[in-house]
Amino acid sequence: METGCRCPWWHTSLTREWQLADSGQLSLTSRMRSVADPVDSDLSVSPRLVIPAAELGWRFSRSGGPGGQGVNTTDSRVELSLDLNTLSTVTDFQRARLLRRLERRAVDGVVTIAASETRSQLRNREAARARMAMLLADALAPDPPKRRPTTPSKRAKQRRVDAKVQRGHTKRLRGRPKE
Image (cartoon, rainbow, N blue to C red; front, side, top):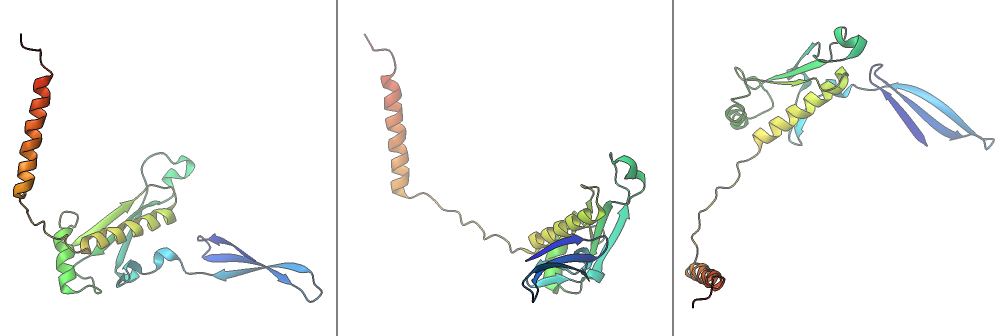
């Protein structure tokens, strides 16, 4: 059986394993192993599009709002920037679509996502990465099919008129009886 405790600030993972010794007794062994930081890896937008980590720009600053003793000492606010003009992993068609759909969010072709929801810089980095991936995936999605306008058939028009006539007849019956 294996249990793990992930400690991203140490960039290590503690793994504990129960092993059966030759004498028939169970013993618990612990190992520390180095793991890659998930926020420093490439950004996966879709199975076919992965943005290299070198093209992502990070900026850290102090987050606003309450935060206790650490509010003025930790740079927990995160800004993730991506330059769409120099993106190496997209085709020209995809680049044009990204620039067209994100023109209101982009400043000179650079899209920036800010995250400051949590007090942890790591969680804010993860949130910013997730939002950037979702934003790019939505911008790269194909256009929905155009709606073809249709006209009601003659029978449907007749049913509509008949229903209106029936409804009017029902309402007429609700009035006072004529003397």
